[in-house]
Amino acid sequence: MKSAFALPGRGFAALRRGARAVPRAAYLCALVGVLNAFAWSLITPPFEVPDENAHYAYVQQLAERGSLPHYLATYVGLSPAEDAMLADTKAFQIPGRPSNPAPMTQTEQRKIEADEALRLSARGSGDALSASANPPLYYLLEVVPYVLSPAGTVLDRLALMRALSAIFAGFTVLFVFLFLRELLPGTRWVWPVGALAVALQPLFAFISGGVNNDALLYTFAAALFFTLARMFRRGLNEWTGLAIGAVLGLGLLVKFTILGFAPAVALALLCGIWRAGAMGRRASLRGAAFASAIAAIPALLYVELVARTLPASGVGPGRSAVPGLATGLHIELERTWELFLPTLPGMKNWFPRSELWHEWFLGLIGRFGWLDTSFPYWVYLVAAPIAIALILAALAALVRERHRVWHRADELLVYVAMIGGLCVEIGVESYETLIQGSGIFEQPRYLLSGLCIYAAIVALATRLPGRRWGMAVGALIVVLALAHDVFSQVLVIARYYA
Image 1 (cartoon, rainbow, N blue to C red):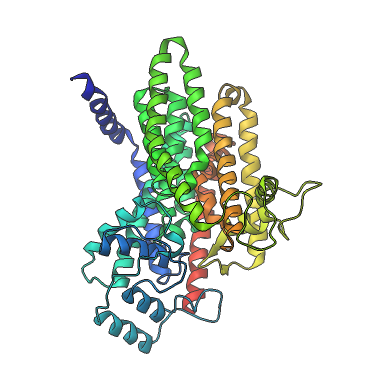
Image 2: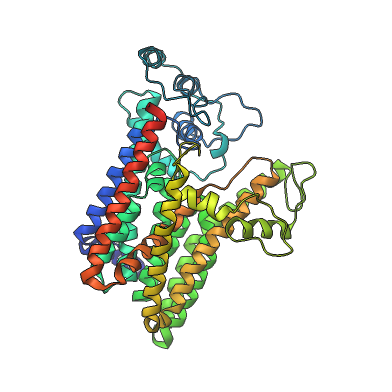
């Protein structure tokens, strides 16, 4: 009986020791992440974060009816209270219409206050639109600020729910810092540079300042990178396996996109067993078994969910809800490739432009609101050489230390596989959205699950010139990141309030 409680006891003790060992700089970086996301939550008008109306409706369904939402084929509204606020805040009249600002007149404010005073019913139809099929963990956590809202109005609840998402941004930055500490243990001064670059990334802060389950997905993705980096540095054992499995399993309860990391996690566990050697083989095998078992539970639930929903939709492999649209595995592979890489000879050109540039790069530099608020084109042309310089500097740092990198080649391969798996997952979901006739899936925010790699590139670029000049380079990078964030906020303010 005593041994049954030994592992959890050691685990909690390890967590306490780990929390005490976290550098103060990590908490300061996390605080910057929280405050920046909170600032974005105040700047962005209600329901002007993508799908925020649907995510709010999911939380509303949990809180008011105690049940999960379900998608309705015919739109009948959400709830009287939310529908009134969506109308009063012009939530559907602003996106795509740059001449339409957010409500600012006294007449518009009086209308909002009058509808709030009516205390309209918050019990909805059960539909949460595009969020209906999402796992429930993020929304269960958001029920807390929803219920504790002192005013109990839609806008008051939305503000508190956004604040909780901003707190998740702080945890994401914290795990990014800890990832860099494990990845580059000999250069402490680059850890805060990479973490602050993430904390000040405008698109990350914009999404984390809204009600969107991506905010918590980023946290679990960063935690997964951290736990894997810790395994590579300190070895695979029971506790490490529990941590990896718990992060991956809970991440699946936030959003299924994290499944894209699963093959790389399996590869990492194999590497951990191989690294352990004969002496540590038994502990590493137990760690891998714990990780697999814990992560498999929500994965099996996901498989069951897919099995139940696909027949109902009438769309399956080789079938399309769009008449005349060709389908098949080769088309899915072609579209996934062309989402991120140039079209090869013999491939059909599925996209009229380079998605790597127009969708991903431009979007990550700045595309806000419902994808309708962007910088002037010259800003992206200025940002491009800066991004290329950072990537080249990071590659130069790897080449300079190629002997060390060679000894950690398996770890590097795992990180490459994680980004590759994320891209494949985005491609698969994009293809499924296409054949279901549900519109366009791909958005730059989906790449933010790889924020740890972005931070690693910044840290390696900072490390290249050595400590003396590297600290100056790091300070310059942070200043540029801050300027990027501030000008992005000004852009959004001008869009909605000018």
